[in-house]
Image 1 (cartoon, chains in turn purple, green):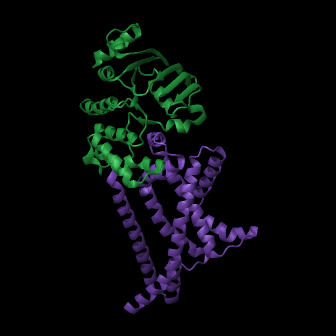
Image 2 (image 1 turned 180 degrees about the vertical axis):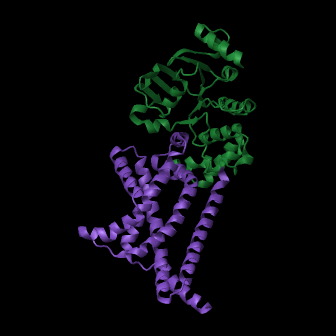
Image 3 (image 1 turned 180 degrees about the horizontal axis):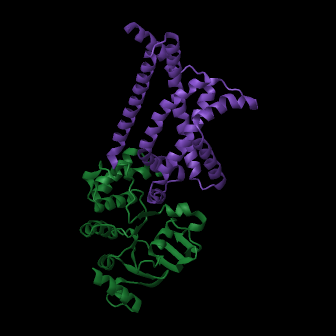
Length: 214
Length: 240
């Protein structure tokens, strides 16, 4: 029994490699996309604002699973064929980028106008004002919402099993079918809980760090 | 030092500055008083480019704002009613931010300069505090030091004591008074009449977007010519 748990855990751990990779790639690029999207949304350039509003409307208003199917099964119809991992990564980045665009935009807009004025009278330009005064203050305010998304992403990553990516969940399911045992699912659940807990802890530490100034 | 000629400014339909002209000499301390809505703050904000004027000519140390606004604005520092300190930075961080980023001076030099300024405003012991840990009066003194860190030739104060509890007003006024004695050119929008009278070389009385009186303090406070000024002073002084 013990040996079986160790064996299956090893097998599921191999699957979780894909989950980790997807998580990392999505986290990095969707945050970058979110910052760019938020800056675009507050840019007061009407065309850019409209395009970005359409983008967040579509990607926040349709199921992630649909978007995943679209990228993997839909795009080949249009002659664009993606391997499972790139298709999954692209979908997740664009989807989470839409959420982060709105979260970051809200954070930036919550900063008092006086902060821009103070920076301006001190001679700071737009780039300096945003990067040194506004965005650092935004970070503290968006941490709770970002933390939620970070946990959602752990769970959403399991969706990639449906396009045949051998992630954590798929590995567990394969083991369940192969061994006719429920234990792999329990192990998978424990893995997800561990990952989520680590993320919660990281964000709690961040929130503590940023709470020094208010 | 400052030369303003026929400045007009509207917010939509509402004309806030209606033909403002004045000159300020090096080292002068000017108080700007008048009823609320008379355009005092808008005038100050226009001088440093926080508001764009609709017409008129503005020269700061001979530099035309129209031609090279940024260069002209750099000669000035500003202190706000609401402090506008950077909450995520310590007091020291607030003071060295612009010297480091805008002027590009060395961190050690910026810190040394900042420490001297904090000593001047009596807050040396607060250099590692965050703004949220300070009282209103302390915040405003930090804000003054932060503006001074950029070594401006002209300081603009926009109602620097209006959001302070009465018992904290004095400490801020003392700092501004000290600056006046150092002959820094200053324009101060204020409701503190006693202070305006003691500190200023000249007082502008504004009403309906115009400077209706530009004279020495005695003339306004001891012997006001216009009925409008008399009424205003009676009202303000009876409130205090």
